[in-house]
Length: 179
Ligand code: 5GP
Image (cartoon, rainbow, N blue to C red):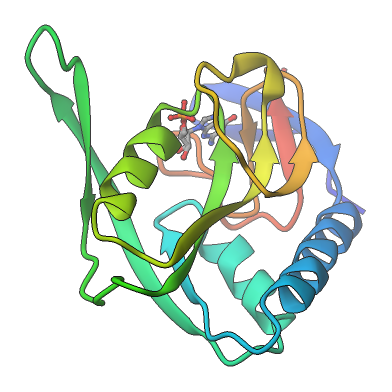
């Protein structure tokens, strides 16, 4: 059972999705990936920091031959036309001709995913799909095809299971939402 309300910095968070529900969603995603990629050797590209717990649990249920890479996305101010620029950092692997599965904690507006997909596709992988634990459908501002979606949630700020509020909260097994 999730514990009662938690305090992180100056905010209170109430129990939202318990570990059992998250685990069930992660297992379903892994089972679908196992079926869809049978006979292939995909490269999972996990986006740090938020996806570390999701990636670990997902990969424990993946029974394929596969590789795992970890990347970060750096955001900085671009020109007035480009707005905020998001750049992939840390990808050492040659992704050309590979089947990529991006592993993300949450898709909110989709800006980050849109930028990542663009940069990865430019490196000519054989295919790219996205596995996200959480998605906020009401917030999406891009036409993105997200094949593997764990749980759809409303437009609330959530923490736990790898997701943080200003650095805190990543270590909780359950998900909490701001009150
Ligand atoms: P997007 O580019 O889709 O708007 O945002 C994606 C990023 O915003 C996520 O990778 C995550 O870092 C952050 N984010 C969006 N919604 C939440 C949320 O509810 N909780 C936390 N902790 N981070 C969020």
